Image (cartoon, rainbow, N blue to C red):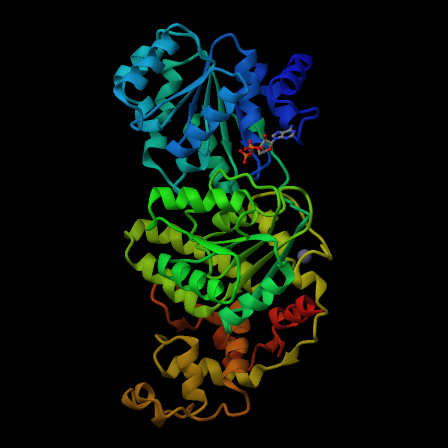
Length: 517
Ligand code: ADP
Ligand code: ZN
């Protein structure tokens, strides 16, 4: 069987060797076993079900959430001489009927559909008249509420089991935490013995986080390292994309914007010029990058904090597809947390819980003093631990020793307590440093015993300490309501029963030097 798969790999797809896990996955599917495949973006998931589709005598159904993805896949397959069609609302009546006729004449090997199309009763009864060998569910994380792109329609796919009861079921995704993996297996009734997880360790990507201070200047400085090279800058909002594009354009960079506010033509044109190396830099919202396969992207800059690790990993995964080194920089400002909270506040209670869990995870990544690679890889459930990955800012920087800052912590925590556990770090520092701001005065906080007792440190240093207090669990940031709160550890510190140690230079400051060298 594997010889046949190898033959198809070479003569249909034109490749000599399988990528890691492809062969194992294909063997498993072809032998009739349901399979869950977790492979990072660019890892080669499509071949995992496309080769079996060509080996099975029956037809393979592929469930895909996005029309653009289906279109790309069908176009690529058609070019290779593989007969594939899609069914969705973008087709004209004639095209739709043409595709249906091809399916009924058994002239296709693969049918791509959105879940809501597939679940229509007329489609189901049509498909139940032909031999369906395999049902493939792409972007399978959409089935889980714990994922970052939950799609309720995916939940109904289980009913396919009773309709196509002889088919092999295959689920694929690029981003699934262990919890999401379990959810996929439960929802599709898959046996978790047949889960294949490819390594998420992209060893050519350098990972770095810098505190966002002067992002325009930090961006220019970062771009100095990539003259005439390709890269993507991700921003949170369309407005930010437009502003940054204008700024960089003015500075003489070869740059174009990409976001959902542009016309379809303009988006397609900008993407095309980027792919052709006609323009070096794309400034974009997360709308950019789905399905693009440009090998020589040398950097990914996150100008704003991403909403979750899943998205972040997917976005940085677009760099260095050619295997050559690429750099990923995230600018992390605490005000970005507030911006994301603004979105979260507008969600339902239920959605909020998931969004906050995701936000906490990405903040944990941004703030860690440990290996960033380890955090990312472990997040997706893969075992990986290292003393020094040599490819992230934290591993490369020498750790400055920690100092006892218990007294500073006590001042800070009691100020949090006295101001009612509703304010953010910046306000607490203002009180500690005796600010005369209208807000402090109108709250009567200049009357507090903790007012003006923190002049020994600058505001920046206090902010740095505050982050370390949170990171070390002696202070809590309430992501739902925004303010800082105390916990049991805070009380131990205030009573002198717990020592707090911290660094006065952030790891990010140290790694800034690395980049300058
Ligand atoms: P994913 O869906 O996992 O993001 P794709 O299936 O789109 O990844 O594959 C990414 C790229 O790698 C595609 O250009 C594909 O043609 C290529 N590719 C896949 N498998 C192989 C292989 N065995 N050898 C060489 N290139 C491959
Ligand atoms: Zn590391």
